[in-house]
Image (tube, rainbow, N blue to C red; front, side, top):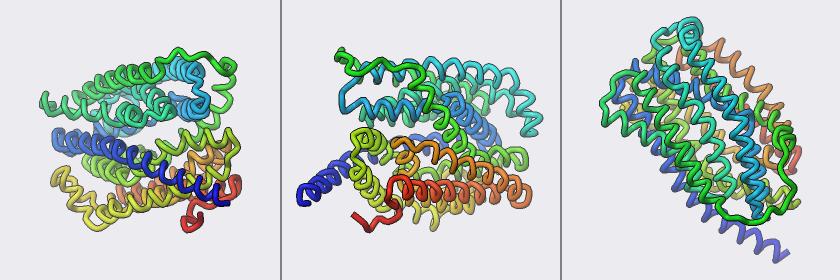
Length: 435
């Protein structure tokens, strides 16, 4: 009993220190993303930034499709391989994942560039969007690939390198390019984004190569394609559905509202995501631990780490949410006078993201412990409901309807995942008072 208590306290201290490091690094990543949105809005203005941010949401979604669920496969298998220091498996998993995702991403990018005109004109009713989509197509390929590299670095416990690859390099290079070159159109900014994403991929690969440079002997059987592809399909469905929940409001709103309103919605949504950077920071630390503990059969350890992480997240998220709910007009004014009208959108979306944080790392809990099908089933219910809500609310209430639909979908997704964690793993992540 005493040994278990001491072990729990030691794990809590270690988790707190690792989370603090991840929080600082993730804060830098969130800051880079915020700076990118700020520079885009201030440099391009509401109309052109609306085209840029809508195109960016589209290629973010397409990059997720191109990864075919392999990002979570890479994370889980890398995290599970780390206790045995099986770097050969780590290399095999990432190498094969990059090969497959790269082929899919190139095909998707070619289709996007080839059909940019019809997509912009017929789907969104905005012909000016076409050159922006074409210019971002190469960046979509790089985004898909450097995400896989970043997830492998996360599984290797290289938190700084992972966050830098995923969240820092591209926004900072894009921001610097916009400021130095004094670009005025969304299409020009899109070309800078593609160059920045390619640079991030190259730097990320260099960091990953350095992290796996050891010539340690192989300890397990070689990783086959079936071992990678079998869990990838349900994880791919999870990823696509979660992306639809996150961005379908913007996609549907893109066909109904003006570019200026799209810019307000996109800026509000990306600012609200600052609330969940705490969750993302904690996930950097706990996701590989969940995978390793589950492989070792330590379900009590999974529970302790999960509940401790929720307490840390709530403590860190409360001031951020309070700022967004109480002072949304001031925060939106930072992007320019044209964005102040989006203050109600920020308030709504911040509440949705707070629920996301309050439920904890439930998605990773399910996916890292072999219950990815439960997560998939939850999202298969929530994502269509999100789309239907958007189709109902946006024609009636415009951008406010998109914000409400997105916030409700994010809350529903996470509360359903809480239910499955309770049923499969035997504890409730909302019961933070328990030890």
